[in-house]
Image 1 (cartoon, rainbow, N blue to C red):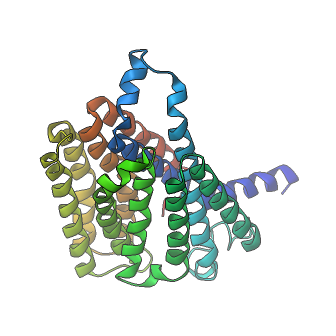
Image 2 (spheres, rainbow, N blue to C red):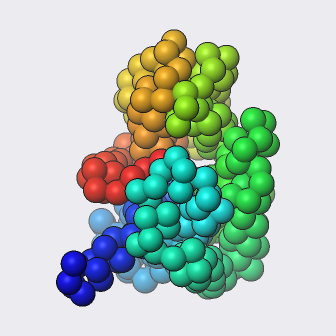
Length: 310
């Protein structure tokens, strides 16, 4: 194998560690939070020539922040799992030798630092949320992931906090919209719960619990229509798409909790986070804004064909 080939394998290994397709789903969280903060109107103003693109600078910083935070969290996931992966998934970047554990640790640390520094450019509150996400990610990667209750809860908190990071584009609104974090908490808890059987298979009771959580999420998304400033009818088409994408796979995984069915459910569930975010975002900022968020789905799906999601 020549030097050029080795360099390609090494760079690909680093990208595999970061799970690019998953990072795109984290961008969707930020766009949802941005809409929930009331900033979604900015896009309408831009299209009408009533505002300059400089008004999007906080959004750009927050998108960079979530890239670093999510990327760092997923890299450290593989760092802590390196010994287990050597037995169960030897083709992954670290056990295969394409990336050393030491270099992966350095990469994850740099990504976390980028995430916190970028968030700090928006506000102290954004930085505080970024630090919380960093600590929560490390707690999940090192300890909580193997616990049947605290693992899903911990991961859900990371994702819910990521949504609030987007809301922090307008810091004062975070205290008004904090409850929105509960939606990704429940959704990710469902995915994380069922994912615990993606290697050796799972239990039917876990699949049933995951389905129950998904049903609660779908109900909550439409129930937000009771709030002032949220249009449920705009969110309805996206909610239907979300249900069509995830329910068949989760039902199949609950009925036959074999590893293959569970992996498929997890993969579709992770990518469908973008649809979930588009659903809620459309309720706050309108149909076109929801479609803007949904554009991230084909990008994430394309990357998922090249890089692993789970």
